[in-house]
Length: 113
Image (cartoon, rainbow, N blue to C red; front, side, top):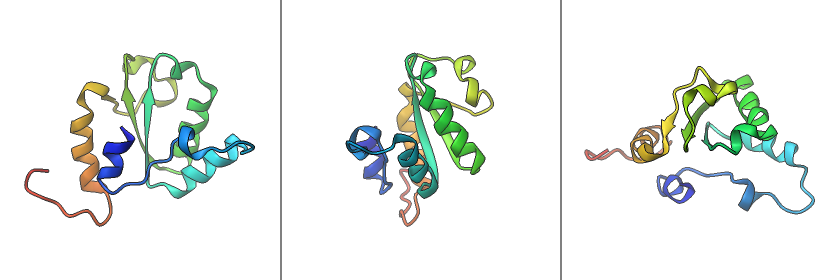
C-alpha cells in the first residue's frame, strides 16, 4: 500500500520504517499527525483491539485531518472510533488511490484518473 501511495507523490509514515529504537512512540505518532494532510489507517481484526488505533484516530480527528479507514476483513460496525467515517474495503484500494491522486499537492491530473 505504501509503495502505491508514494508512487502518487505522497509521503507515507509507517511505524515499521520510521520508528527507531529508543523513540517515544506517542511522540512520534503526534509528529506524524502534525505533519500530515490526511491519514490512511489499515484496519484489521487485530488492529481493532490496538490501543494505538484510538490514539491515532483521536489525534487526527482533534486536528480535523482527513482519515480514511481501509478495511481488511472488518465491517464498518467494528470501527468504534470511526463509526461515522466512510471506510474503503481493501479490495477497492485502487479506487481509493484514484481519489487520493486528485488530492496530492502538485500532482498533474491525466484523463485516466
